[in-house]
Length: 278
Ligand code: AMP
Image 1 (cartoon, rainbow, N blue to C red):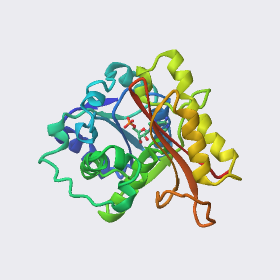
Image 2: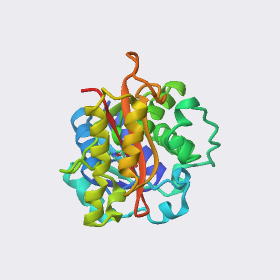
Image 3: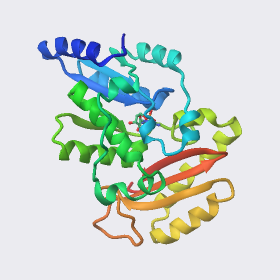
Image 4: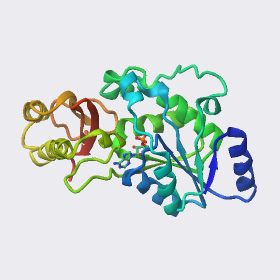
């Protein structure tokens, strides 16, 4: 695996690949890699000639300094995992290599970016879009891989690509969970064993909504919040249409409902989502 830290060296590598007509699968990450990330790498490996994975903890998308400071960094083990998956390039840039100029962050994703994460993490999607767009422009990947774990991010990246006419196919990958249903996340490294068990209540809560659609969304939401609030500091529990991300109070045939949650457990912020369609 090539480990590349500068945009110039990456461009050189990519120029050779492009002359050979080789397809590039791109997997952007913030590191502390787990099976969820590796599923993206595996899929990219199957569908492309070469796979580029980036690890860059993007300060622009953190609205909470403590969350940024405590973000786990495990580069050595990340490298080993990527080698085992047959990843071709690990791009490990500094901020200066990602942004040649300071990004101006003048995106407008409309209502889609104002709800849920957009409401609770002001500026998060602007910072995320800036780094993803910078990577797309530099790497020009044939296909780019994003997890449904960050469903709202995935929706906004699709919108970014469409609006800016960026030529890469966005490939969505299903959320990878542990045996109790907890979505794998780099932040789970900050939970104790006991807390990891408690954290799976988020999965159970969304499953309850899926299995009890005889109740209206607003009833499901209030019951769920009531159940979760003894263990979690809940930021939101929302049922929304998965295309528009508009919250749903009452079932309607035109909506494709999905549950979305953000909750803090012992100071660790967890997010998850689940389709409510069988
Ligand atoms: P992150 O390193 O958290 O920025 O995540 C990098 C990519 O991996 C994003 O597209 C995430 O949605 C995806 N990802 C993170 N956790 C999971 C998971 N448990 N299952 C599937 N994809 C994931």
